[in-house]
Length: 223
Image 1 (cartoon, rainbow, N blue to C red):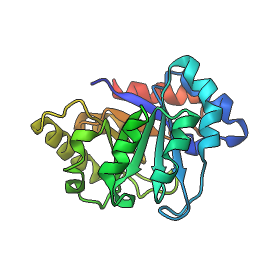
Image 2 (cartoon, rainbow, N blue to C red):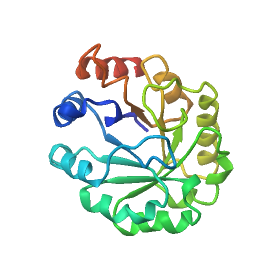
Image 3 (cartoon, rainbow, N blue to C red):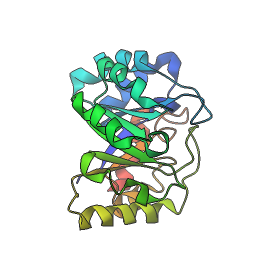
């Protein structure tokens, strides 16, 4: 699979969010990643369906999927609202879904792709039963809640183990998305381990260089 880049708006300048998302798309973003946090499951509070709806007129004409990561308790309550707002992919956490199979099928029944995420300390075996029903596994490589954190080094080995499991079970079509601390310094390592989608926030949206320059640097590191 080719490596896709998903800029995370968590690190964007919200005073000009539309412009920055447009810059990321113009620079070659493959997805736009939206981190939804509820202040309960993770110690931060971010955005809801209204922001996804605001991004839809920017992303949809460019055929850029809106990739929504629900770091929230009881996500099943808000899944329909995010789908209606324009989400193309919805990812929920195994840690917040006691009826994970039901939640994944709820997402797929609404006509979009379903993903499941695990935190760094959650054993990969927690994914074993749900793998045949998902389009994407999102591995957190920082403890979720805030942007700008450092990549947890042991995460690379977890990516490799998950890729090996998918290959052994003939589920190679499942995407492995990696979120947390991704930069031009580690992107090639993460991709070589088996990741196919790299979520990058502060590596793309920061005041030191333009979005275009940051995207170019990340792409170059993968080559």
